Length: 90
Image (cartoon, rainbow, N blue to C red; front, side, top):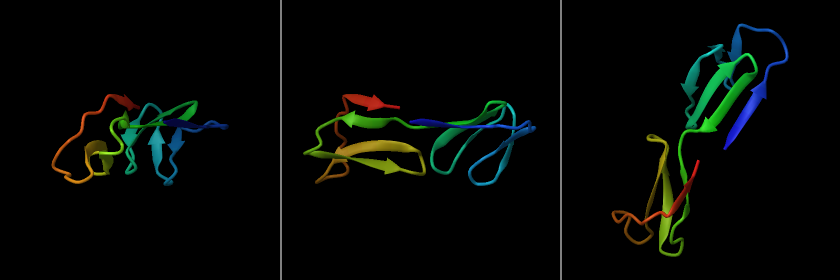
């Protein structure tokens, strides 16, 4: 998913949701795995990962790794065995 926060006055950059300043034209990744950019229109952020949506949910589960900003789909009974994923979103 994505979101945008618009600027309503003239600045030389954007202040993110953590209070950190970013210059126009800059890009960064947040600790919550969002890819963000700053433009004169404001801050735009989108998830930096794909989410699995089509896999065997009875046999398998999706596990999110916050360090690598990625999902792994594995068997519920044996996390060493990966499951096939037929569709991803993001």
